[in-house]
Image 1 (cartoon, rainbow, N blue to C red):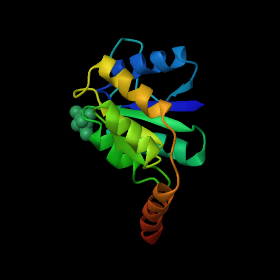
Image 2: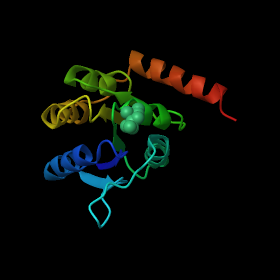
Image 3: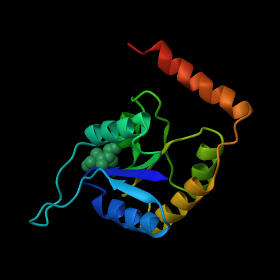
Length: 154
Ligand code: RB5
């Protein structure tokens, strides 16, 4: 499974720690930045640009899922959700992370580096990536989300 990782300048350390954690578990991890430059300074990055970039990587199938991080997880997920086909969910605890896979078929999980610590973030990823979409009545509702998206597609 290919998992993309993207963040703004508020979440570089968490992104790198979570990427290493997921690599250790055998996931193929693609780093979309942002990162440190050669002087050790964090490269500034506006969360809408990163949300769009990684959202497009998910929508095109370049990666199967993605993990997006900013200060709160909110701005970057709002931005990714503007890309057709993206279902990005901000989660700050494991229960929602599992349910958003099982019921919403979320393809991006977002977290806030100023909200969750790294150990909690790892538990959240374990739940998200350990769960399967349940289909059935949930498929109909996910299809309804796509219909809203189609209604406003230019
Ligand atoms: C950047 O300071 C901050 O606004 C951003 O990381 C995020 O929290 C936005 O939702």
